[in-house]
Length: 112
Image (cartoon, rainbow, N blue to C red; front, side, top):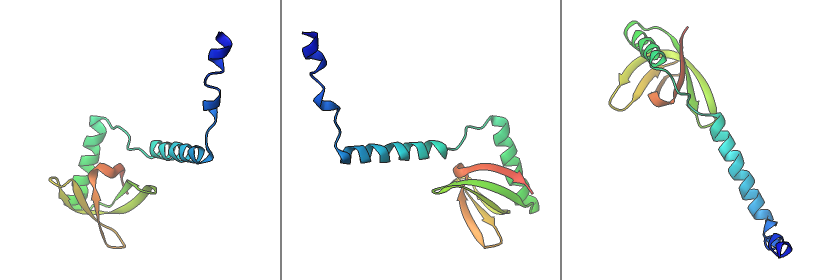
């Protein structure tokens, strides 16, 4: 009787090639999403980020922002010209022009 139960699901172990490809794509997408994730910051680090954004806005201090984009992390250097708390966006002036960024995508911030 036990032999019958062990062989019962033997045929279901096979996978079609299409299913293997989909499973592999799903695993790669999940691994990619896990590698590019916004870290959890402490309250003190968030206050430091806010302090640097305010100094850049008031005094024209150049800062370097690390931003999470679709293709990974990107560094951007510039000066904050406008901060909109309601929409959660900031306007940064760089050498290439002005860029509007969402605050929730900022991963790192430092003074140059």
